[in-house]
Every structure is written in C-alpha cells, then in structure tokens.
Picture 1 (spheres, helix red, strand yellow):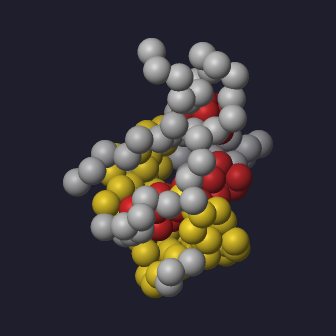
Picture 2 (cartoon, rainbow, N blue to C red):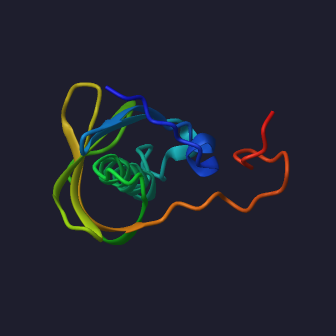
Length: 143
C-alpha cells in the first residue's frame, strides 16, 4: 500500500496521520486530544467531518490515473457514537466519472465501533502548486 503524502498545514496542525491511499481506498487516523473536543469531552463534529472529508478526498485522488486533486462538492454525515481516543477514518470510491468521484467514508474508534459515516461528491481539478511564501511549509522550495 502507498503511504500518502499529506502536505496540508491544517491537517498537520490537527495531528492527522495518513496510513495509506491506493486504488480508491484510504486510511487516516487521529488521536483525539482535548483541543479536538467539544463541551461533552468528545471529538467535535467538525473534527469528525474533517476526517471523513479528507479520507474520502484522498481515496478519490488515489483513483485518478492523471494524479489530479479534488474539491468537495457535497457531503452528508451521520454521527452514531461519541468519538474518543484513537479515531481511524477510511474512505473508498463508490463510482467515478472523468470529472467527478463519489465516495463513502467511516470512522471507527479503537474498539472498532462505528463513530460516524459519510458520503461525498468530489470534482477532479488539475493540481497546482500552493502559492505560499518562500520557505514556508509546503512552499515547493527545494531544500
């Protein structure tokens, strides 16, 4: 399996680790910390939605032979259980066309219990290097 190169500053700041992305499938993980929690001492819904969005998006990207990126068009999320401890999000492609990819994702906790599920539609886009200051993280500068 191919380890995925996550060069997204927001995800790095969150502490998201990417285990793999290959052939329309992906897996990422996050150890829920206090900074990720809501007032109920569980993962905030926005954190869970981010994990699902990213897992589905990188699954979609991994299915494209041209190596294009994707942007989220729409996403539906259902929450089933509190997210605590280590969260593992998996994404998989359900269907793809030349311009769009349709994916499903789920998050499980350390015991394998389903925390949330999602479906999403993503549009393929030509990948462009980020426009960041020289020397900034992921600036594209050789070093």
